[in-house]
Length: 500
Image: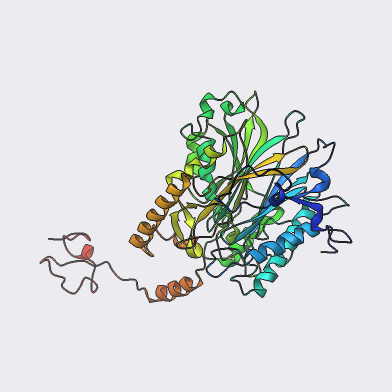
């Protein structure tokens, strides 16, 4: 890559941003004391836009990018210093052709994953934004290495930035905001998952967007919601696709070649289905890790696609080629953006499926099934490293590009405390009851960090022998042990499974 295309000659000063932590400066204090219930993120908004006298009606996007660039020992939490280094780099280099890239942004963490979420004009070249994000995360990885954190740069699996973040390791998505003159308010739900995979978000999509038991608006609302939604489902397993295309599963060279061929052009294998008409097909496909609901549209009067209002980072990084081949040492830790209210489910309806404490793949070593834990934003993992999920809602002014306020959907001091306790109890019981055995551990093909098991498995495979099945003689005794001489079927009047 040549010279970077973002930033300016002089770094942007932090004084050029309005910070939400100072929002009450100079105003009367209405509460005697403030009881902290969550680690609310600080909102940085470029003053030139926040206080603009004549806000422009321009197309804008909300973009969220998340990666593990090194966590405090145990993969449990991101270091505050690393978060601040990433925030500082983005804020100081937040310029493209003399204008801010992000008019408003927040920097958060879920477990040991750090995320940058911001509002940007649609006119900004997305490859420039991805380059800024890549370099900022690299800065964070350098700081993580300096601090001796675990796995510095862990999710930055590409050797270098190649034009976009897809396939490079970080989870990233962008959702176009609506353009309208009458109502500048838009509610956006942002959800981050750590120690799990994109399939976890299928619980959102098949809950509030498909089933009235999670969202009564599907039945009683007068908005576009009453028409249902259109869902785009992505096949994430390029390895399975390669085998289905003819590559032998034990021919690694042929398998890698076919996977690389499938990955060229950044193409996806997708299927479009309609809700509720295709309910059984949607539920059938999305029950497993391979198929993920990646995008959801509202429907117009004719029942066709209208507005995109739901998008998740649907990739499987252990099927993406790195310098070590098609390998990756962890689950995919996805991120999701979704509109809420109006033509879309309410935030509480979107998150409600997690109250049942479902299990997802991931957890410690990326190799288990375990009950997901809904946690407040900026929380660390617990028990066996996860899996965990956070969700916040942003009130966005689409005329100014400002994030006005934030609400934590899994905050402390709410009924989610009870869900966390239930999920914790179930997790302890499940893991201790099953240990390393399935279903607590994943299928052999889905285990992560498994080089040691591959070596052990190969050694044991060489020790297996092919022998006739164990049988018993006519007197009920083992005789020669059933391992020597002719099999039972060769003896007169005998059957292989016959026991007298």
